[in-house]
Length: 106
Image (spheres, rainbow, N blue to C red):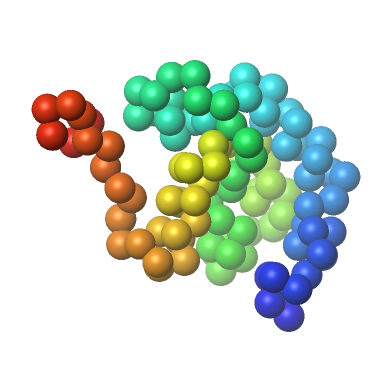
């Protein structure tokens, strides 16, 4: 069965996930961590993302306890999440670089 046809519970997003998600959002103060690392401070997160994707973790033989551990999760904004998902799915070869006013990558 493809991801698109499974319910959120079948994909592992149950009440335990909601609890961990809320914990990570509190830890990260509701701010996008990739934006924070790039110097774009104060960007609100809309989701919690797996740093090592669930698909890759499955290939590595990780158990759910490791995959969904807060150390493998971070708050992320919609823009960063879209770029990361495209990269992971092979739709984009590398993340877009932010360009400063001088035309050079930031």
